[in-house]
Image 1 (tube, helix red, strand yellow):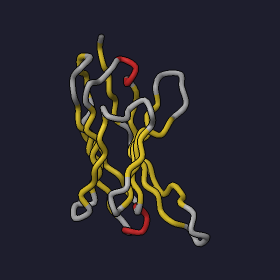
Image 2 (cartoon, rainbow, N blue to C red; image 1 turned 90 degrees about the horizontal axis):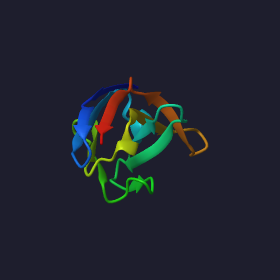
Image 3 (spheres, rainbow, N blue to C red; image 1 turned 90 degrees about the vertical axis):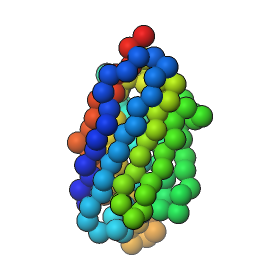
Image 4 (cartoon, helix red, strand yellow; image 1 turned 30 degrees about the vertical axis):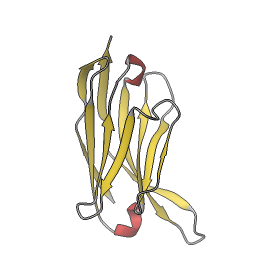
Length: 120
């Protein structure tokens, strides 16, 4: 699977940004798509995920403020980020999951990452 991200940038606290990630390859390799964030000096963490059917999960820190969505016809996932805070500053990576032989979800690919910087 190949994942190409767009969006990101510099925004003031309270502002909004939208990230996009277009997937290509076998559709089975991106049954679930999501976003992970890696803040400076910290480990990469799950921000949000969405299944092909539209079921979503969010990290507690972004619930209500962020919305993940996907357009299956375009193989694209979006992350709408509202009410941004300085602590949201991170490199955001698009991630794809496929189902393995045992029915477990496994990561099949990462995007190149896009920087989001929120100034106070």
